[in-house]
Image (cartoon, rainbow, N blue to C red):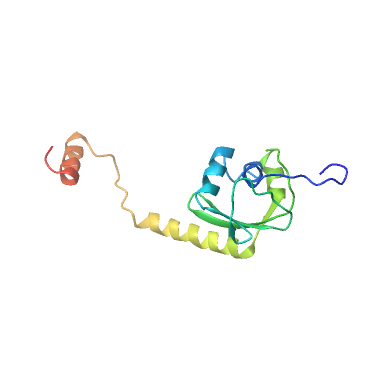
Length: 132
């Protein structure tokens, strides 16, 4: 915001600048797919963001809720991008619970000591797909 004038930035560009998504195209796809809510309402990619607005978004398997603190359309370093928003305490708690659940689920999955040899791979394929 230079000289007191307000920037008008689209939500897809802001999400990209805040480093939630790697490209603007991915941000646009997520918005169009209904994975991003702006103040509790499904957003459109052309929506202009405002300071203080709440955004709920899906990032990978994690749902986050953030509040906009600054508006910028330039993708900078991660340290600067993190100053554009503040994650809500409820979102942090939920995200940590989900990460713990994923960690516990990973412990339940069997991990063999070594890779299967050629014969064992054939047996696994036969078990999975039948005789080929």
